[in-house]
Length: 155
Length: 155
DNA sequence: CATGAAATTACCCGTTG
DNA sequence: CAACGGGTAATTTCATG
Image 1 (cartoon, rainbow over the protein chains, first blue to last red):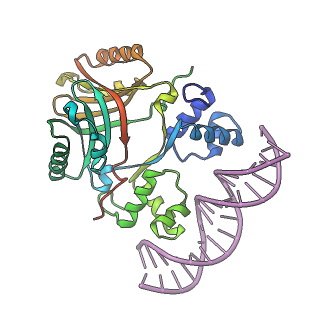
Image 2 (tube, rainbow over the protein chains, first blue to last red):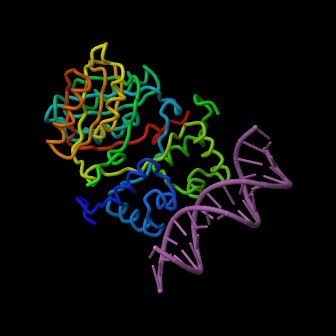
Image 3 (cartoon, rainbow over the protein chains, first blue to last red):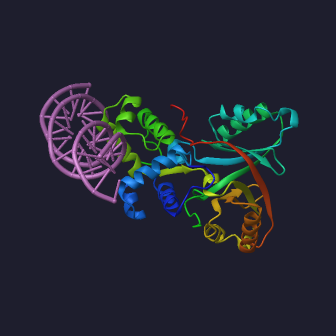
């Protein structure tokens, strides 16, 4: 199965179902998609092998593990310093995501921390690592976060 | 189990393991955390019931489902228009996440689209919905996205 | 798509700290 | 009160034809 397009309607329905519930049983998937269990099993395995399904994760409430504060940090790295930035940031455990971007910034990261003091500490570490200015946007409330495949078009 | 702090070291190890592999078997979790299977089963169930584990998701490659382009859009809504913004945005399927934020913007959203034309269309819909200016940051590359609990501190 | 075998889960128990 | 270890039935997954 090529990555680009080997996905039919049945695959897309399976992906939507698994994006909504990553632990859904094959029998449940079979019922919601109208296929038999073994067909679902074969399709899901192929989707996993093809990398269409990159993995499965439990969604953990950040507040429940003592990190109620989230923020986005834009990084404006100089061309000479851009190399290795993501690798350095990955070493900071409070950094939960890192993207290279085009726009005003060069990188965007999401962080998850316990309190204002931890926020200060993480920002210091980031600035020390990238040696450049940052722009912070605090998260007040997460309204929703969903997969691109959760409500995928037909085609 | 209260949301705030009923989590001991064993719970945190379970959460880290499930954040890394949401379909991990109870027997595998028992082995990596050094507990017996029945204990793992009881703890995981309690974590689910307490909402510490909010759910499970399959990670779907956006490119594989025909949406290779991601971007962040900052929204600068007027005080009078802020109400209902997230609800409106949730109705736009290309909007994959929405946060209320403090900083320069009022809302931040992440979008996932097929091509430049779709991007234009989604931005038009967002601007029509919120009646305000936007600031876009295109994602060039996703280096990593992980759970806040993946590498959680001890305590 | 169907089938049988293997693995996993869910739930019981009594015992222990 | 919770964890352990064992045991079993029901379910699910897996590898076939």
